[in-house]
Amino acid sequence: MSARPATVRVAGGQGFWGDWLEAPYRQVTGGPVDYLMMDYLAEVTMSILQKQKSRDATRGYATDFVDQMERILPTVVARGIKVTANAGGVNPRACAMAVADVARRLGLARKLTIGVVSGDDLLGRLDGLIARGHDLQNLDTGRPLHDVRDRVLSANAYLGAAPVVEALQRGAQVVITGRVTDTGLTLGPLMHAFGWPRDAWDRIAAGTVAGHIIECGAQASGGNCLSDWKTIPNLAAVGYPIVEARADGTFDLIKHPGTGGRIDVAGVTEQLVYEMGDPRGYITPDGVADFTTIQLSQVGKDRVRVSGVRGKPATDKLKVSIAYFYGYKAIGTLVYAWPDALEKARAADRILRQRLDALGLKFEAILSEFVGANATHGPLALQDIDAAAIPEVQLRVGVRSPDKAAVDRFTREIAPLILNGPPSVTGFAGGRPKPEEVVAYWPALIDKKMVEPSVELIEA
Amino acid sequence: MKRPLVELAHARSGDKGDIANVGLIAKKAKDYPLLVKQVTAARVARHFRGMITGPVERFELPNLHALNFLLHGALDGGGTISLKTDAQGKVFSTALLRMEIEVKR
Image (cartoon, rainbow over all chains, first blue to last red; front, side):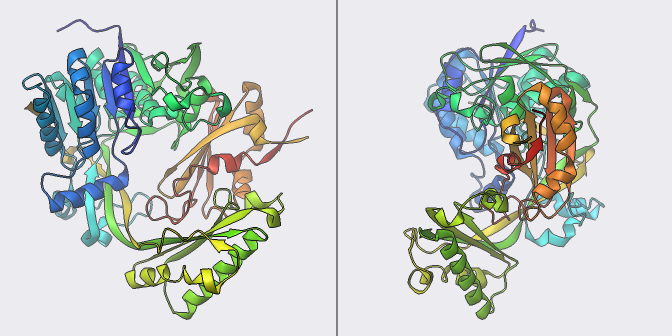
């Protein structure tokens, strides 16, 4: 057994698929780090990837990750930095093969071991699970999955840190996973580096909190931060957050020297409450963290210490994220100018709805928003202002229906309003809106024992 | 006198399905009890009347001088289903900061 480090640094590199392409490179070159974690998977992403895989068995993963690895692998290998990423989507093995190809092209053959974590994909097992009495009830509605079974597009259990730890222990330098929790990508490295046992509930909770803070990238280092936002320096060169953890589970949030952004108690607090449910029970496959025990203190410039985190044992369930085909939607927009911009937009909306009614079109929902007036704060925004003075308003109308023909007809009713509706209208350069397929999300639970994570190693 | 929350607190919001969460954080620790006393779940539900279809839950985080609100039925079905500009509840945070509370001079 090698000696345990005093501190371990885990850098956040991507907060979602589509995050800043410069961030991972800056994280591995801007100062010392031990691990780089990158989160790629949102709920809807899995169904898109499943569709790609059904057309081409070599696809179904976050291709951007492979491009990122091409850029950072030489540094990663030279400095011995380990990478954890859930970029594998529904095809982590294919993603690993693509990264191995890149490594060979970069002259790194035999210098890179890639760990592949799978076992989360339940799509092919659904009928068997349902037959054995696993209803996969919708956590929000209580309905059994049977209701939408024939429309399911993807189904993935959220795996925790354990298979990431296993991959690291077996020598993987890059760990590519399917649907592993965002927090598991940070907790896994800490458990591995410090040798934390799986039932060290307080330290598991601390590592989970660390993961929660950095899983949204720069949202922990000055991005999207409301607190004193005007004084946050140099967001153009924002430094993404880094966890500098100690074996006892306490950790500091930092960023590389010379980077922009800010790490302070107010900003870290904002990120802690982001997407929070009951703060006493933040449930992951690895354990349950109590966010009411977290203590924050500013211990230096751009350095916030996190301590005191308490946790509870893991539950015997895993969350399952299921995507199913729901129907169609389309959103059309037009822009109205002063004077009476809002009144004109409201009149156009009334006319549009009369025409849709007269056509006998049936929609599950029609939603009209007046961007510039009420799209963000609804009626609250219009209480104390002179609505007639608003310089311009975008009318934004959305419809949703299982009937594609109705949605398609709606898209043809927007442009005519330019010539046959209220005046001072513009902003139709984008053309007719396109009907989009709506993929909905079905959250469920499954007994942990029904899901067996697996770890495979691939040598570049 | 009445002061808007935006002077006393900051906030961040996000989504979970059709629920928007709003974390409300006192700028100064001394103001946290004011938030606890006046920014109740019932008051927040009234504030967002017409914008949400379900109940409001509140959780206290005295360690962070923060309250967490869950606004049920806030996102027109949420995620990909929603037709809203703010389908992920990102700006319910500042909408809450429009609320006024009573502050001693």
